[in-house]
Structure formats: structure tokens, C-alpha cells
Image (cartoon, rainbow, N blue to C red; front, side, top):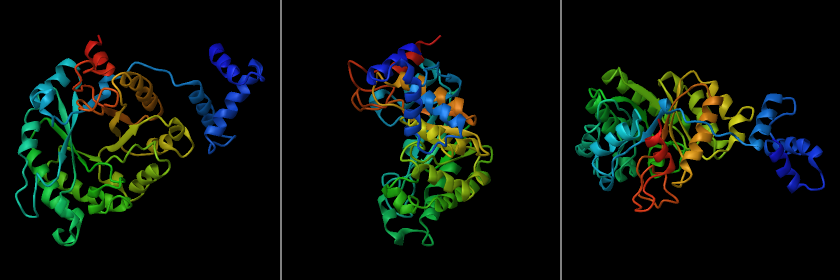
Length: 355
């Protein structure tokens, strides 16, 4: 603590060490304007953030990874999944089942699941998979192609229901996450009219959940996670609130969440992410979280993930984003990348070498 006080005193040389404690409180209060002076718990959280969140050992029992197995330069799907299970000793993966123009080039044409069959069929024993089913082909931008004038019904009938029926009997598939980041201003979200309407997303969730209950009743239904719930405050959190208020919890088994960056002030402020998450009735899976840069991932995981689970009691799983990524080492999210010099991140090495 003395070193931290001295650091503040170096910035404020005319105050002296005796004034440092007051400065720390004031800085915390300024950075969290919404925290009331009478909310002593929130104010203490703010002070703790200013002091620095400590790094702790990652709980690998709750850790999985996004592993899409869509880049053969990292090996076959079977090789990649075996590496996740045997080298990193992780027990679950999240796999993308994306609806695009390659998978279905026109309305009514047969949906092509051949790529996803090869990926999901390569899952080894001891590894379970959450399938995130999302996306929209180019032809969905034309409302003339919508079933009964409803783009969400079209997604369910043309892609989601066939996917559920196809993988319902696969024992490695643990559940289906219905859509991804519906609040984003993407072409797919615009096509399904989700980006500014959480209630319409809940309509989609309800329809998808009914398909799962009817065809794969033993599989879990996971809500879509918005973009990072701690960022773009309060709009992203507001979308989550609107999902809850529209009845999302009634249709799902698990609440999906994404967490990138830190923005701890948005986590601990009254009415913030922590209060929202702990007020849910469902368990929470953080289906994406991670940091860019091969030398930044371990520190991020040791700081952010324990802090999240310390503050949000409902978190059951955290999926690292992501296993492989061909971006350069300094910007990659991948535990593995294609660099000859820095192909493995520090988090990969820690997972591989832990006792």
C-alpha cells in the first residue's frame, strides 16, 4: 500500500502522503459519478478499482474456448479439438454454425451443412460443444424472400430448425445458443430487425426454444449474448435489460454474456452489470471474453475472470475468444496464430504447462 501511496504522492507532490487517501477517494468518486456517497459498498468498490484489481489463478474448471475449426492451416478439426482437450485440458468449446450465402444460396434451396458436419463430427469424447446458430445470407435483405413477411420466422424455418434436428442426437452437443450479439448494427441484425429491438429478439428466442424443446429436449437453450455488456454503457446493458423485461428468461436455460475490456466501473456501479446479472434467475455463461496480443492474454484472464466470478455469482462458464486466429501476434485474439516467432500466446503456454 505504501508504494501505491507514494505513486499518488509523486503525481500530487504538494499534497504529501497524508493527503493521498483523500485523493484516492475523490478519484474513485469522480470516475464513478453515479455512485452515491451513501452507497458505501459501491464507493469501496470504486476505491478498490483505483488501487488495482489483483491477478489470481484462473479457474480452469469453468474455462472453455471458442474453437470454430474453420482454418485448415491450424490443422484438421479433429487435430484442433484434440489439442484443446489433451494439450490445454479444457472440456468445452463453442462452435459457430453460420447461415450465409454459401450455406444456402437462395430461398428454398437445400441448406448445406457439410462443413458443420465435418467440424461437429470431429468432436472427441471428453469435449462438449455449444453451437451458436446465427447469421443471414445476402438474399435475406430482400423482404420478398421472408416467410409470411417475417424474417425471424424465415431464419427459424430455413436454418435454425434444420440445424437443431440435424445435431439433436449428437451426444457431444450440449446446447444451442440462439443468435449472436443481436444489438450490433450488422447486416444480419438489420435483416432480422433485431439491432434496435430486444423484444423482437425475444420473439426469435421463443421460437427457437420451442424448436429445441420439441426436437432436442435434453439440450440447453442459451440466449444470445450482446456485444460486451460492460462496454458502450448504458446502451448494451439496456438491451440486456430489455431482453429480460420482454421475458427472455422464460424461454432459456442459460443467459449468454460477452465481456471484453475491463470497464470495472460499469460492473460495480449501482444498477450496473453486477446488479443486473445477479438479479437474473438463470445461470450465466460468458460465451466470449479475451484480450488482443500474445503477451496480454494471461494477465487479462488472471485479472478479469476471477474478478467477474467474485462479483457475479451466477457465472458457470467462461469461453475464451478464441483458439485460433490468423491475425498478427500483437493484435490476435487467438491462443494460436500463424507467426513463426510468436505462434502461442502466454495464456496458451500457461494452460499447456499448468500442473
